[in-house]
Length: 273
Image (tube, rainbow, N blue to C red; front, side, top):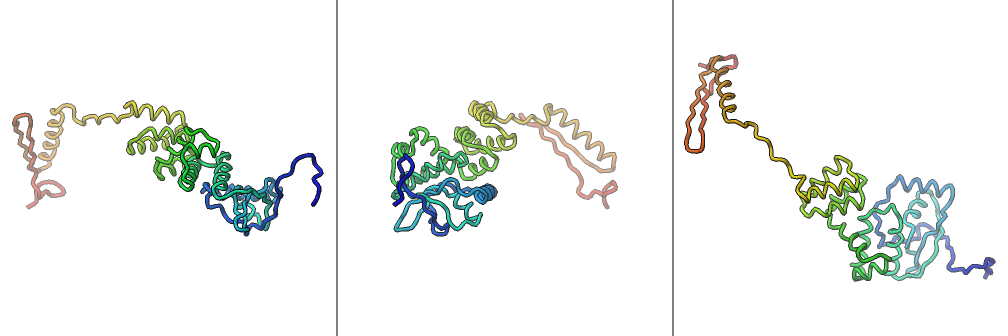
């Protein structure tokens, strides 16, 4: 065994493992791997190699990926047959936690993937929120806030992400418990490209009732205007040879106005027959 020539403790060993031998991690919370970003990383790997080894754990003698999904995918695109890996001793639960922690520490993981990963961890290993928070190094309130994001429907989540909106937008939207209100708010957020702060103000206004739709203005403010308009139209028809008739009578709180126009009217003018 080669003696360590540096005055630092040595732990583990880097293994060169064929990319085809590494089993995917079933607990991987990340679902979105944009191809353009993978291609960029693959180009960097082609030029500089993999600077940070992947992390694997051995299960029945086979390497299972713990951390480094993007690096592994990019390495395959770059045509690498082997990748550097370090082994970590971890059972299924520990591997799940390490994978989630590794992803939570990366800024490019969206908030809904993080929330789904936490929920999966809790359900799979039957943890309480408090236990999961301790394992992940989070406060229980922060974890609970992450999980609340999943109250938004998949369509609402997708709309937020596709328009470049993040966790603050989602939290503001969650304050609206009514689904119709959320749809109205989301439409305004997308149309006006609202920032998180602007979204907060929009939701505040909606909760305070300041965004209610104004009642439509009446088209006819005075009934006399309506009668004058109808009478004018009747005069035009009569001058054109159409024997239009009108009858008006009042009954209680209502005015009944009946207009009678012959069915058989020629195109040029006057009645047929």
